[in-house]
Amino acid sequence: MGVRRADFAGSWYPGTESECRAMIESFSDVSVPCPSFKRGVSGGIVPHAGWYYSGQIAFNVIKCLKHGISPDIFVIFGRHLHPGSSNYIMKEGYWSTPMGELEIDSYMAERLISEFSFTVETSSRYEQDNTIELQLPFIKYLFPDVKILPVGAPPKSSSIRIGERVQEIAEETGKKIFIIGSTDLTHYGYNYGYIPKGTGKKAVEWVRNENDKRMIDRILAMDTEGIISESLKSSNACCSGAVAAAVAALKKMGAVKGEKLIYRTSYDVMPNDSFVGYAGIVFGKE
Image (tube, rainbow, N blue to C red; front, side):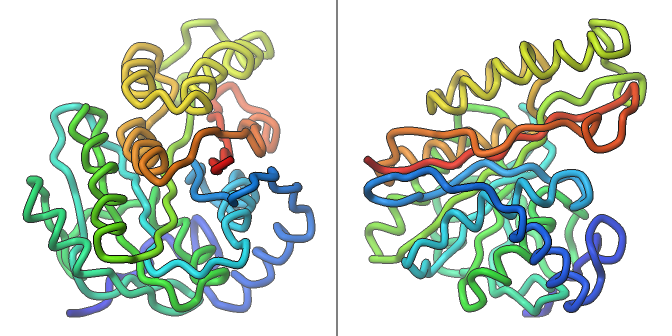
């Protein structure tokens, strides 16, 4: 079946187990309180920039899922796709991390492939993808024995149904699953060809208080169709299909509410006229 490489290890995040553990523990040392949901946290939305910029946010979201329940499968929706893109999935094998390998859940993958059209990637034939890979060391650290299901979901309504089917199949088979959707928010500045409000602090405030806020509000409201339409209109989420699929699955799981855990931009870490917004959001059952 083979093992997919950790392509971004040593660049976007540390390349060795000891270095990963040290950085993860530094994130844990400054962790923020998890929201209190009576029936626990069932999933979240995470950013996927290099760990220096957004690793603490992503780790804190995934850490909030560790509340005494051991999942069988950790489903990660991600990928930079457009409305005309294919769905993507890896159906077997392993994905390497500096913390060790994570096994793909083949049964869930095969069930989805039987119902939807996918571009199927293998351990040796795939497109490099940071949106999912950057979450895997966190998952391996917190849930060392879990299987994973990596799914690329484009920004279109069919992704919502894929998310729903993930939970329905899990329920049919008695599998416990956790769900995350991976996206960054507004990519602003000359580096990204997007400067509707010029440059400087006024542009940063517009991204924080208006453009990113509109997307975050849609996510917190669990508005799956609105998440996709808002991103296509306002360029404020690079992977809205992944977010919509994750939210759809979480709604099927019984999640009724989202809470923003952390929000910041890369400007807060390293001021620059080109910057990106990041949000960590968790969902729970009440």
